[in-house]
Image 1 (cartoon, protein in one colour):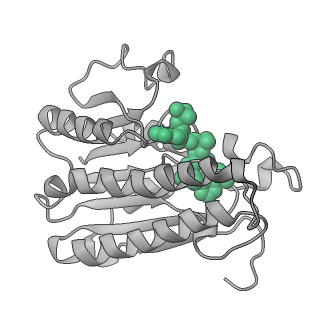
Image 2: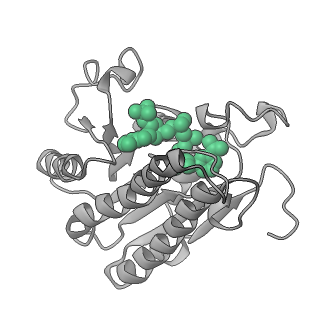
Length: 237
Ligand SMILES: NC(=O)c1ccc[n+]([C@@H]2O[C@H](COP(=O)([O-])OP(=O)(O)OC[C@H]3O[C@@H](n4cnc5c(N)ncnc54)[C@H](OP(=O)(O)O)[C@@H]3O)[C@@H](O)[C@H]2O)c1
């Protein structure tokens, strides 16, 4: 059984992954901004007092919450061998943006890039204790190609993809394997304003949860570095 940190587990992809992995008996430590979001769900900390389940406050814009979450998880589980990075934000920003959009760009950078970087850094020494640690990162097709007026989101996801490559390189000899999952649209709150094709034709969160579950069962020699998930035809990829 793995001892797993999942960021962004309050909603969307992170929550679907947590719901799948809790059934598979892994140790789960969920990082969320508001624990109330999980009340009355199978991930409710009040209903789950098993020593294999933890919910901790985590805000990607507040560096100290990352360290506190990691340290509390290590104290409780005595190890951490997996991180699944799902926390992320989306914003449309044109190349020629307005002055009042600078804060949006800074927030995208903080949450989508520095968040996963700092969380990985804080947990690194524990990941290296295992000879088969895993880091799964929800990147995006926007980390592989730039499309539409997504200058800042795409910039953050390209940077995140670069970070994934560095994690892979620096973790390889220590048995750490990294997978960057790169979906197009996924049917979550993040895609709620997308109306040009039906939500049912988007990638579904449960399918990403199944992919994560399968990834965790693969040996070091067979972990894919990148998984691109197309829900629409992308002729160049
Ligand atoms: N949906 C898509 O179409 C799509 C496609 C490609 C890639 N992705 C990526 O997949 C990841 C998950 O997206 P999603 O679709 O599940 O989005 P979502 O439903 O909007 O959920 C986003 C999650 O990130 C958390 N989060 C946001 N800001 C945070 C912060 N400052 N600190 C900690 N957590 C924070 C949210 O917590 P709160 O509930 O507290 O806000 C929520 O749990 C993101 O990285 C996203 O970029 C999504």
